[in-house]
Length: 60
Image (cartoon, rainbow, N blue to C red):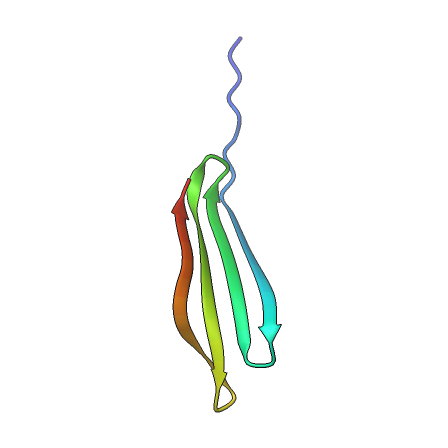
């Protein structure tokens, strides 16, 4: 008898406040052994967050 595990696509987003005007956002998406992770830095300017740079981009 053969059983197959069902693959579930997941997406997670985490926020980390560095200071009053800097926010780091961690996004992870995909399957358990096949997906991507990315960390972006956002700066608060004129009451709006603007993407400043990508800190990490990884395919797993």
